[in-house]
Image 1 (cartoon, helix red, strand yellow):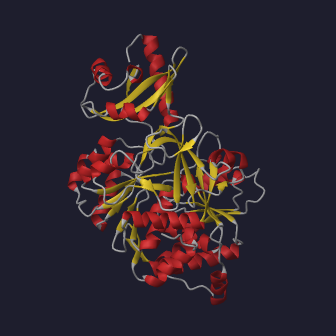
Image 2 (tube, one colour; image 1 turned 60 degrees about the horizontal axis):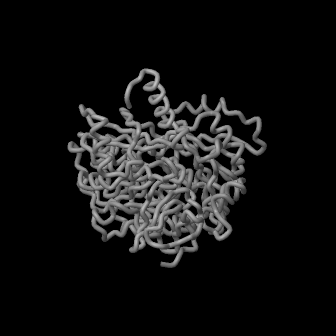
Image 3 (spheres, one colour; image 1 turned 45 degrees about the vertical axis):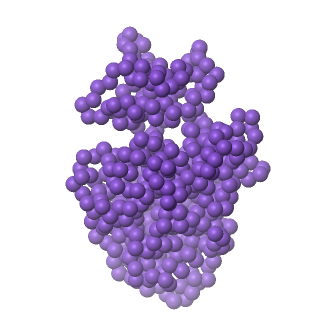
Amino acid sequence: MELLDKTIIECFKERVRTTPHKTAVIYADETYTWKQIDEISDMLSVKFMNMGIVSKTHAAICIMNNPVWVICFLALQKLEAVTMLVNPYCKEKELSELIVNADIEYFCYSSMCEDINYNELLSNIDLSKSVGFKRFIDVGELAGSGLNSINSCFEDEKILLHEIKADIHDTSCILFTSGTTSVPKGVMLSHKSIVNTSRLAVKAMNWNSNDKICVSVPLYHSFGLSACFIASIHCGCALVLLEKSKTIKIFEAVEKNKCTVLNGVPSMFLAMINNPKHEDYDLSNLNSGIIAGSYIPKKEYMKICSTLNMRKLQMSYGLTEASPSVTFSDYSMSIEEKSDNVGRALPGVELSILNHKCIKTQNAYEKGEILVRGFNVMKGYYNNPSETSKAIDEDGWLHTGDMGYLSEDGNLHIAGRKKEVIIRCGENISPYEIEECILNYPGIVHAKAIGVKSEVTQEEIAACIVLGDSEQIDREKLRSFLSEKLSYYKVPRYILEFEAFPMTSSGKIDLKKLSISVYEKINAANLSGGKI
């Protein structure tokens, strides 16, 4: 499959020409066609242009999942602006640092958001260190009239707008990802990488214009941007936007709109099947979806597919730095076949494994760090050459920080995060292997294994568990159960109960907060003489 040499807006314009009157976006009781989205974003583009936004301008979007986000994104892309996607829940300090470090000139937000008082938030942002910042723009207010009635632009301004054309290798977006550094790194993604990754996702998922995607993942994440929004442009399906991924809201949206596709992270799907109210809603139209963003044990994946009757819930592996998709399950695979792997690499994408001898290999079952090379790899971290050189080597391989191996059939198997690997008495231990075993013990619904520093053994293993309603645990029986299935050095020293795990805004377990809680529980038990 040849790669497309088109920008996001070129793909969007082709979609408008092909199906102008077909529904593009559904939000609550509002519906917009592709033509309406095009005309409203044209109107907003002209307003932006008159404010000074031009090619290569750094303009941020800090808006929840709603039509204003979609229109603002397209309006900025039409001007060839570098669009910075910002988490709406960022605090004053975080926003101040982003504005300075990403050289943001215009900051687009929407006061229509009920959760956040933007007037108060923005008034507290420290702009003293910014040299290029120009203004805050309330896009909800600016585009408000256009959301209800199309306002025509001046024809000469429209002509100027339509003459703007980006290069496929230009930076379309900068997304922010946290890591080992205290300041989020700005991932620069080109038009070519986003356009082709999303297009191949559509092909892998067999989506078409009759589908409706329930979008509960944030559009400011690469998952929402590429595998939901830009994917819909390629196949012409409708997007049903949800501002929040609350379980009941998802049930309601899927039933009301007869959604056929649901993409999400494992924690979202687990929350759905563990909510008894899922039986009160008609979710029968759901057919397919992408489950990605973090590792999911085989047992939990199969339970999700069975409970929601989603036989085409496809495993995928990716990361923001890869636009984000790297692999997809084969669409023809059975649930059992795809339950323990994340599929094969996309066409045009290479996979390699960096083994313990720091040698790149494609040998079957040889474990090491997963490396990715291809059109989907980021251009680099904005204004951060040192971190870029750490992430992408001189041969163009992206070092993901994830551990895994390839099986003989070319499918990728995830073994854990490089930073999460537990080292006990010189042995490298995958936390995922321990978690899989723990989840086979009755009454446990969630499990996470982490390393706890130890002077003697380097690290000890702490098993963090969440029990089902009214369940109780006998720690010694659990250890005995695990001892029958795991080598002695993999059996957890500590077993700690939690009501729920702390989560990040992207639906992943917040390991920093969980680690703090683990140390607090261990110290408290040591002081009291209790057993854990």
